[in-house]
Image (cartoon, rainbow, N blue to C red; front, side, top):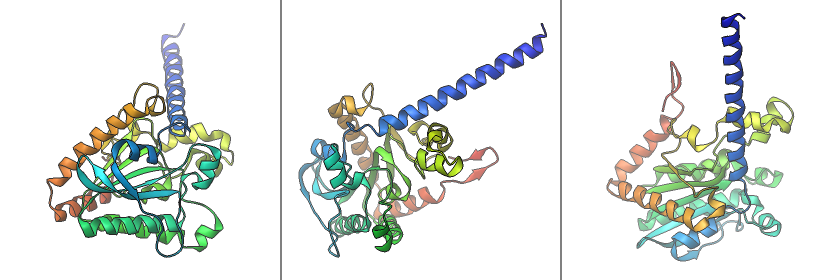
Length: 292
């Protein structure tokens, strides 16, 4: 037996096994993030926000149910809450467009952010969307501009902003509500520039390659934390948030409360400058790859 060749063969098998394990773990996280029983934004509002009063409409055209928001109290402080809403049953999901917002939804978010700025209220956002609504009507209504203006509005706020990824975070539709001072992410949430199926359709022209695409996208919390794309990973109850929604909500509460305490110690000018710096340094390339 040639020991050198045998060692190379075994190392190759080990590398292949690790690769398949990573692919399996990543795809499993994608499936958990999409689980229809995961707590939605409305449930986190119920768990975390006292006296919530929903505000509807963009004061221009319509009310988009894919985005919900309003005023309430978090740990005794008045806050503005905005988040994607997917729904659970098929009827609910259809009514909420599966959490895919149209321009009216993003304009509603802008209206609520302006309200927060005017009254010096902290902003809490919850991200859970496969992406912005892809229909022709949304494009004709200025979808890209609505997303860009929402991001610009968030970047200019002087009040504390905490965004929490609670399920899917897809493309600009997710980023539009995540230009925050602190970006928190649940353990089994995902966050990427495109869905694995969309990526597979582009690269391999076959959505069956979605697990491979998911591994390449690196959308999980464990991938994104070292890159500085998210600031904290919130552990979920064993098996996922859908198995213990109240336990998951308690952990989300603690993470948001800690982030708000840190941000309230900063001046408005410091918050804006640090927020700008945080996003400008994302994607900086070093000799070994992306730098956190």
